[in-house]
Image (tube, rainbow, N blue to C red):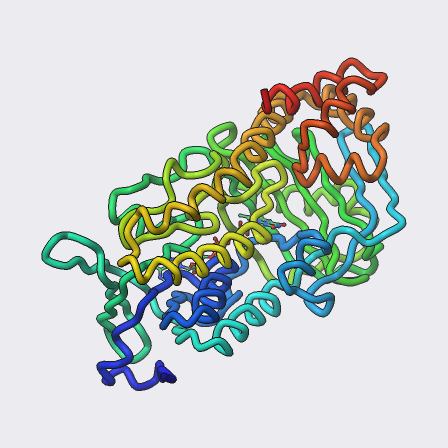
Length: 413
Ligand SMILES: Cc1cc2nc3c(=O)[nH]c(=O)nc-3n(C[C@H](O)[C@H](O)[C@H](O)COP(=O)(O)OP(=O)(O)OC[C@H]3O[C@@H](n4cnc5c(N)ncnc54)[C@H](O)[C@@H]3O)c2cc1C
């Protein structure tokens, strides 16, 4: 039956199979796939619109986006990669478009429309502030501030898609705040001119004390310029760092002509790997709440969509078994099988990169220069298959390169 979110007084509206907290890519994708399976789903987003408060730079991969149903009207395609250190740079020129910079608001609202079309009841400007339990202590609903007043929601399954802050799972005491994480600040800007086919990543102390800076084009005169900094390695505020970089017009920003800000973005991303467990009786964690992002290049959107969709399907299947932990455990197995080794390998490479001095970075860029485009893409996407990395570790002419690839191969032993 159609649920009208504008008629809060209807008692039918307040009873759902699945209630989702958070309307980022994970929550919206879970809502879509659970509704498609016939579950009665409600989703709450605290911001006034989906994609309103951008917390991401929006770089992803065309092949993966296509598989997940995001077509080329939602992104600017990329084929070249420029990796810049204080005194060196690797310019990888591609024949094909492989990466993309997403229009975040448009993409997230597309995901929202897909969920609504399958029957999800969507609430915006609706902050979930409390969790309800039955007499046995099992969670069975939510309390939410909505534009129509406080809503009291019953649901058999809660999906926590609240992102970095993991609101529900922390409130239940299942997880604590992330200890290792990245903080990023970014301006979306006008610039006079940029090659819109090229991503720039800048490393070394002058760009970031523990991370990297970036220039991601959305068109030939619209770019995202940002800085990401790892905690606890550095306490520097990325926005202060970014302002300094823009004030000094550091290379390669000095190639963009006039730069004028359009929007500022700020966000945090977990950097520890998967949560110990991401399912409990009546609860699933997805996206950044579950720690599914790849920490190497702060990339989480494709995982949030893929595992959000999986959680929605398996969550809907679990309803007939009262959404017990046992009935949800397959989701946890698939996440671990697909992501755990990949994230652990990425964390090893990240730990090496965080320890590099500027001079070491200049040498690391020489390793990247020697890679083919395919090898570079495998590496940056953390597609560390044992075979590919072993081949690189054995065959690469440079000792430092063999050590870098060995890191990843050893991980799989
Ligand atoms: C600086 C930075 C740069 C990044 N760049 C990239 C990139 O280039 N490519 C990439 O793939 N990934 C990138 N990421 C990571 C990516 O943004 C995340 O992995 C992804 O957004 C996770 O999706 P999610 O749905 O789990 O969480 P989110 O996108 O954070 O969505 C969570 C939603 O929940 C809502 N919410 C929270 N609490 C409540 C509540 N109590 N009630 C109601 N709603 C609530 C929030 O408002 C938010 O809309 C970046 C992250 C950062 C911080």
